[in-house]
Image (cartoon, rainbow, N blue to C red; front, side, top):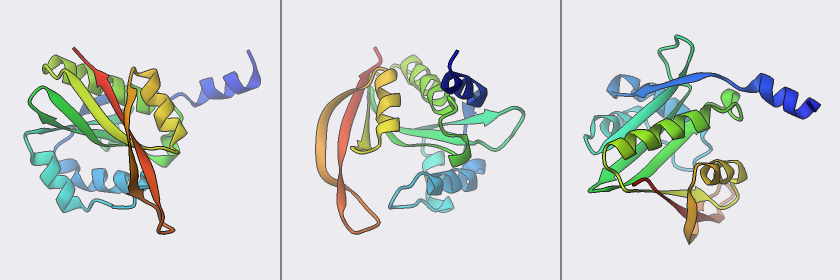
Length: 165
């Protein structure tokens, strides 16, 4: 086994997933701030999303921790859903937790009868795009100038879809 594979193997974290609710609003806001988004969510906004019955939010936890180290949030409309945000804490990235979290979320949405899941991702976010492709998402569109950048420019978003049915 090569040294890179060995390093990657050592860094894989084992996580468990579970639902989040309004009690997790501060943690969700803090995690969202780590996501590199231009528009940050405050705890009140997160609490409103977590209380919304059309929004499904799951966290990923390490060991017996009660605070999530990542989350995924989707809004359901009829038999479709859209991922609003997915974030894993900076110190836990590239450890497999994002894949664990998203795979569990896909299974949950599928079990709820959701037929299609959509998301937008910044065109330059190669690691996220790679994760989405590994989990069966395909690029179905592109939105020019969708994401504001810190320098005032705007980045394109790829629109991705995965059929769950």
